Length: 353
Image (cartoon, rainbow, N blue to C red; front, side):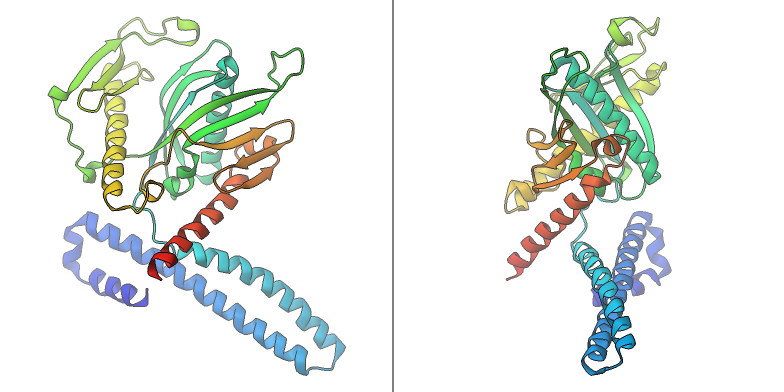
């Protein structure tokens, strides 16, 4: 890593590199990542040095006051060094190529009727609160609501630092277990929704879409219960004939703007397909592929009676569902992030052996 950092310094000192903004930007991001790692590593080294000094003092010092001070400092350093070691472990993992990308998120009810639609709406609001807490920008691209306050489907984008690296763990089936407001008998119902996280395509991806491959139609935007919200056919539906992908947007009153949004979603879906195909050629197994994960996999359960969130992929749980639904998603994402990092590092070390 030190050798690589030296190479990056030399490359970025050459003015010619800035003639290619994409390449220079990638090198600067890599240098920043290594700079952050070395700063953390040196802090950890200093902690280990101070811990050893305190242990030596405990072995040689007879003064009770000094021994008590050394024991107190050692306990604090051990706790801090353990946390620093976890961060170092995660920082050692090669970054996902998509980690610096913005994302497009789709949420749809699956099983459970109105209760699933209501939970989809609550998860949508939770993600918006989480984005606000992290300083991300959110933009609603398409939204279709039910008459009871739920959503039939919603598509939105998130942009900002570390968006994909955090949100990629959200792709899959989310299960909710609770007593619906409409349930008079107090019975617990189980419903599911699907969440898809797409890395957003940009101009550097060169996703080619031929006009003859598109089937574009317009329709009148509708709101809850099917009532028309526009008097003109401003909503746009696009079918990409080679892949069979269908996308739509009715969020804007302008047909041109809805067409732009639909194409933006389509490009990100095509990027996902391309990355999956490329990854399957090189990955040892499908589970190591670059992408957004298995959408059919039940990844998480929200058990309201027990106030528990459980992530089934890593066997971790967190409590305090009310806070999580208000945007405290890191309650479950932090342990998921740590477990995923440890698992990935073990895979890397196993291959090297």
